[in-house]
Length: 453
Image 1 (cartoon, rainbow, N blue to C red):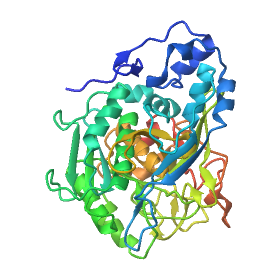
Image 2 (tube, rainbow, N blue to C red):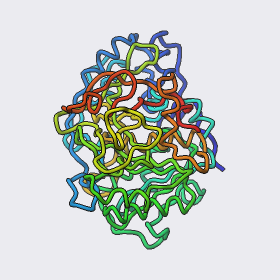
Image 3 (spheres, helix red, strand yellow):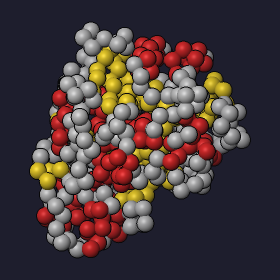
Image 4 (cartoon, helix red, strand yellow):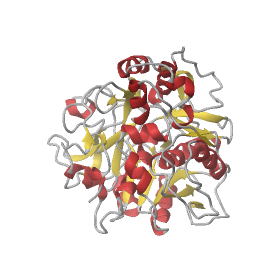
C-alpha cells in the first residue's frame, strides 16, 4: 500500500529539516521555492529577498534542441512536443544560486548532471496551488500517458526520479505503474526509440510531480502514426484510465474530424493534448473538440503574493507555444470566443519554456544521460491531466475540456496577460490579454477547482 509523500524535503534518501533561517528565505522555502533535493544548510544561511531571487531568475537563458522524436512529421504522423536543454542556466539554477549567494553554474553541452537542474515537484505544486491536493488526493485514480515506441528503462528511471524527490514507490509490483502496448499487451511491446524514451520520461515524471498518489499507465503505440497513437488512446480508456495525456501533434487535416470520433471522443474522460512548440499555429489532436488543448507558459519566481509569475512562452518566431483557430474541427458548445467560428486552441496552460523547464530523469539512448531539463508543451499536457486527476473522476457524460470554462475569470485560474507566440491578424489568437486568449486559454491552475465538474 502506498502512502502520501512526507512534507519534508527529500535529499538523497535522507530527511533534512529547515533550520532557523532568515524570515524571507524561510518563507520562500515554505512557498515551494526550495525544491526538495536542493534545500541545503548553505541555502538557509544566506539572507535573500524574494525580489532578489526574482531578479536573478529573470536572467535564465538556455540552449536546447528538439527531442529526436520532434522532427516535422510526414502526413498522417505526429511528432513529440519535447525540448531538451543542452546548455546555459535554467531558472531553477538561477534561483538556487541566489538562495546560496553564489554564481550560477551552467549546463554543459552533454547536458547530463548529477543533480536536477530544472523545477521539481515542490516547485510545480507551489506554482499551481496544488501542495495540499497533491498530499491528500489522487489515490485510486489512473493517469495514462500515450506515446510512440518503447522506453525499456521507463520504470527504472521513474523509480530514480521519485526516490530523489521523496515520492512513494510507483512500480509494477505494487500496482502503481503499468506499461502496455497499444493492444494492451505487457510483453509484446513496440520497438525501442531513444527520442520517444525522453518524451516518455518527461511525461511520467510530470505525473509524479503533480499527482504523486496517482497510478500511472503508459501506453506505447507501435509507431507515431495518427492511427496508432489514437488506438493507444482507446486502449488507455479501455483499461480504465479517466485521465489521458497526449504530448504529441502534427499538422491539421480534413481527416481530423474522423479521428475525433474514432479516437478522442470519450465522455467521462479528461483527455489533454499539447498545443505545439512551433509558435502560432494550430495542430492536431489539440484541435479536437473533445480534448483539453494545453498551451505553454514561461514560469518564473516573483516577489508577488503568489510567489510566481507567468507569460506566454515564446523563444523565437518559430519556437513557442502553439495556438490558433482550427481549420476543420467544429467549435464545442462551451467555447464562446467570437471571432473563431471553429475550435480555438488553447483551453488552459502550464509551464513549457525550456528556460524555466522541469527536471527529468532518463537513461535510454543517446539523449538518455541521467538528469536533464526539458520544456515544450509536452511538459504542460501531463501536468494538466494530473490536475484533473487530483480534482477527481469526471462526470460520466461530461467532456472535461468544458470545466475550466465554468471557472473562467475566477481565482481558480491564474490569468496570463503578457506575451505572444507570433504574429496574427486577430490579436487574441496569438497575444495574451486579460481573460481568454489563444496561447494560454483561460490561464493556469490555481488549485483544482477549475478542473472538476
